[in-house]
Length: 202
Image: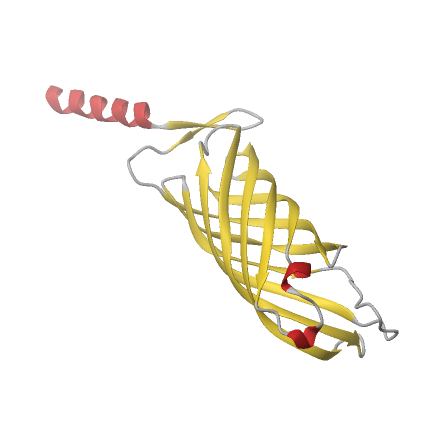
């Protein structure tokens, strides 16, 4: 019996020794030990970029499964949120752009109060020109499917053990735009800055 109790104490001590500290704005939280950890989180973002030299505001985000507190495998999606009007038209014709795809992200020193991450979204979407028909539907004049590759890098701050603030930079590369839309890949491709929050189990 005495040997059993000693063995239990040793095992518990080893478990706490392996446990990591998650640094947050308030205090440190215990994080489970072990060699493999599977968790998940989602990220909501607002993004400032450019289309054809004009300010473009995108909303969206990404999320997925986090392996060993380092590698995220998931998916994301973004869409243009403000009006960017097509030049040389008087009918208030505007561009629309959306894209979605798979996301890979590497998170460095996730348990530190301040840390960084980097990754990329690779997928596709669509670009179109349209005018407002009514409050429920737009008239679409031209559309094209596109391929999108968007690498990004983030600086993150742990607010709590399940909430983080994220700020970072991206570059949206757009390829394969049809000539019928009247805008080139180069004018749809641009750097950007995003700000948002991550929430989940880290």
